[in-house]
Image (cartoon, rainbow, N blue to C red; front, side, top):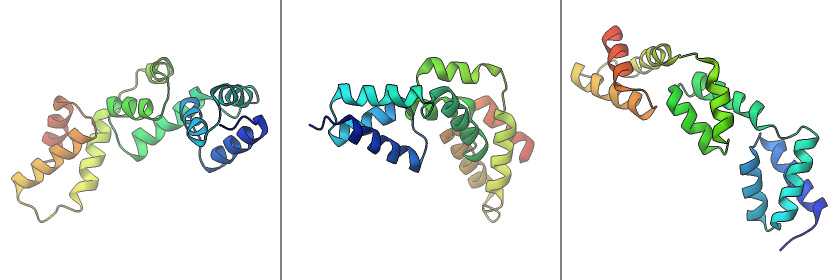
Length: 151
């Protein structure tokens, strides 16, 4: 087991230079690399104190990515954040704003997908769009409403 604080900090900074990471992700990567738990936790504490790790700010970035780029539903975005190691209380705080963009995102996703499915029969088209929206985490009501508006 590695126990050098300097090595752990160097490795953590290297990981953060590639992309943002949550505390949990960073802790998992440090332990996977072979650093002791105390060294990993002190490294994470150090990085939090200097402002390089902030789960709340990172959750906001991931939320925007999930909703606008990946076009996930609000529930899908919550699962995405949880999968990235963001604690549940931070996720609830980020999604507390009350905005619900599900129906708009579903419509945008349908429009985007319709460009590639132009030659499909109507039933196949409807099934494929329904399955796509379901995989993205949209509720049955939202899916039916969006499909009714676009088809």
